[in-house]
Amino acid sequence: MALSPFHLAIPVHDLPAARRFYGETFGLSEGRSSAQWVDFDFYGHQLVIHEHPKTPAQDHAHTNPVDGHDVPIPHFGIVLEWAEWEALAERLRARDTDFVIEPYVRFKGEPGEQATMFLLDPCGNALEFKAFADRGQLFAK
Image (cartoon, rainbow, N blue to C red; front, side, top):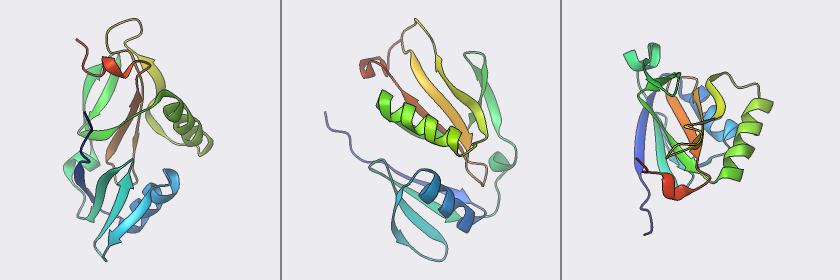
């Protein structure tokens, strides 16, 4: 089954910093833009950053415990191929990224075993990048 691209619009209180972050840190291509928003090609999906005053979630994220870590809520991200995830983790470490949750493999030996990492954009939006050695485990119970 082919996946349809999703569209996600998120608030950013510093549009220039967020534009640099998504463009330079991840190397995402820009699409349309205005003085208040920018479209990005987020791994084939449409991510739009919209200038907006800081939200409570950006100022202080709520967390839920998952596999011994405090996962920030809300968050969004993408499921990458394993090698692509490893390359991104290496790129982010080389850029001295301040991770919320350092890259690691969670649920080792259990259904849904996955590589994951969490970080914040300059405006406090939480992102998760993950990969599965067996993508068929994406929805495993």
